[in-house]
Length: 222
Ligand SMILES: [Zn+2]
Image (tube, rainbow, N blue to C red; front, side, top):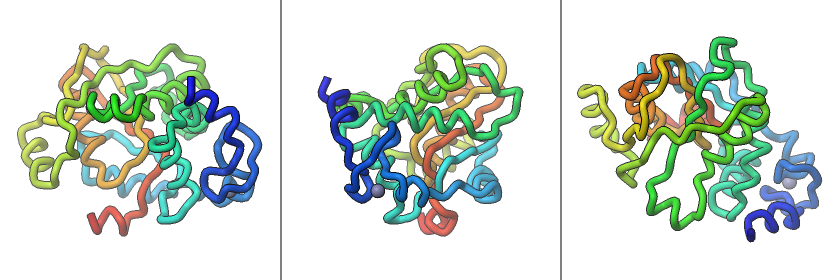
């Protein structure tokens, strides 16, 4: 499998090109440059979205940051397996004890996009997260029925109607909390839309866990 060969043989840091060791695709200095998401930034990201019980992010996605390069490589450089060690780091984030063992659902791509890319990066993140927690497999509970991200206007219409036009649930979920896994949280409209579909399918709370959170000023801009 080309993607497997690539992860194992491409030992250059995806951010700066320096030699690297270890499973994370960054060299040691770039790893050290990663900035953890402050609690207040995560809380501010969740605040506009009542559908999301919480948002937990790993690293700030500043322009030019190693975090951005890491996520870019995961999504666009045919390096799906690089999502596993990142997902394992997601498992170390502090989440309430009540969420341990709850269903882990990756945000899906539209099938056309997934066919182009060859994989859904969020599924690999979810696999890493689940494996580090000793659980079973992620649950692919959602289908993305619209390729485009929802506009702000449409997001408002959806929220008013209490439903999602971007995602459909493929199965019923047990009553209880769900962890929703994605690579990046920008405005939150994608996560909130996915959360609406999960809530409609039986989940009682949706907690978003993401690798990269864009700083608040970027969210404010758009
Ligand atoms: Zn580097």
